[in-house]
Length: 165
Image (cartoon, rainbow, N blue to C red; front, side, top):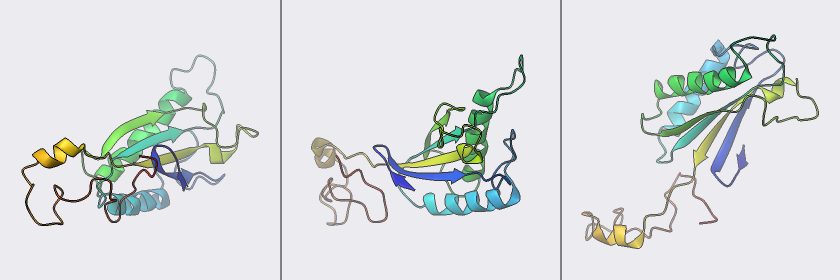
């Protein structure tokens, strides 16, 4: 896990034995599926949106192949999205599904390293509400805990918030 300018990045990296996916496949393994389901249940409780990225190693497909690392990386991300949405992530919570193929290698010195095959889940920072939106809210005047009276720069408990904003 790392903090980025987008939010909290959770990386699910492969090993040579294929913990999450078999090499060249977008089908989640039993163990990988179990971990993704657990993450979905926890992340689904947050108000944050999520971006899902698929990454591959640099092993090329045969010349002339129609299916490439571009399709595979997008399929990895979409396969993960489908499983997460079936197990706790709200339909509106995923805002982006990205496929990067082998363009953002985790281990650039070893382009075929299994750790380059991974799924990244980015728990995106919450957007601050503009002051005028808070004042115009129908919740204005309610209890001090209501969204309308809460300091918009204060973090929501349990949610990742961008410290740079």
